[in-house]
Length: 127
Length: 244
Image (cartoon, rainbow over all chains, first blue to last red; front, side, top):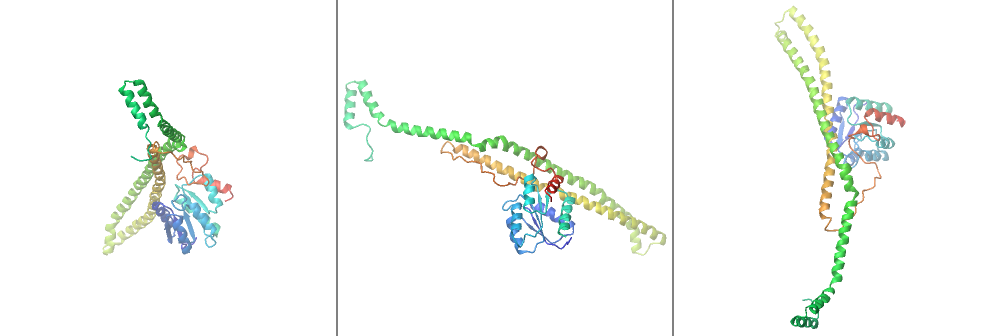
């Protein structure tokens, strides 16, 4: 796992961004940036060479699922691994996220161990 | 007086009416007044008819507005259970945080006490006043302290992570409260609407069709529903059933 990778954390609640950022730091990642919804995230992704995206679903403005679809629809971004960390727990939502090409789905409230496990899995699969 | 306004009674009729009254012909006088009044009646009837129709439509539309029934039957009870959820989550977070603190404090106190015990010997070493026997004892004590402290700080670290994770309640309850605020606003709009409904015709607002998946926020009654997952294990099972 390359701990120098550049990660974008997208969530409308700054407390949740802080929690995820702290957990990522605990796992050794330090190159982390934040956005508060898809509309803020997309231009950042387009400009900066991000390696990984962690996003919430339910946000004002552009929602996480639409951000995911926008990433997958963009030739420059579609390779980006996306982990969804969200309170959205409807089965159809999880299926929709999977169909849209999400790399992992963590439902809130979650534990530090769960987040680490999902990250490990994603990076394993990416090789 | 406008030229276009036509009088309900002509001058000749008015003279005639005065004559009837002077002669004490009450019946004829009343008939003349009624005849004049009837000329304006159709307009009044039409106006009253229009108003009645408007009132009727307004009342009908108001009763039929499905949104109001929905608000009363579903959304307000739903808001109640959402607010209950907020209380539960904040209580859980407060307890988790305090539990972790209560476990952390004895650990730091213990480390502090043991350092205080060793410190006099350590000071002797630093000022080169220590004798060989004391030095050996100090080394053993220090060895034990370092190893124990290393373990204890790891324990502290995981307790701190617990505190960190507990703060997630702010996000979850915030989402729920936002929804309740939206509902309160809608109720308010409907009340305003109710106040104005008798003044003007109501435009029947249909509920917008749900053509895409809507974000719902934290699920507060997962046990009673079968369209949602109950925890991360369910998510993992669902995804692996999809070949993920």
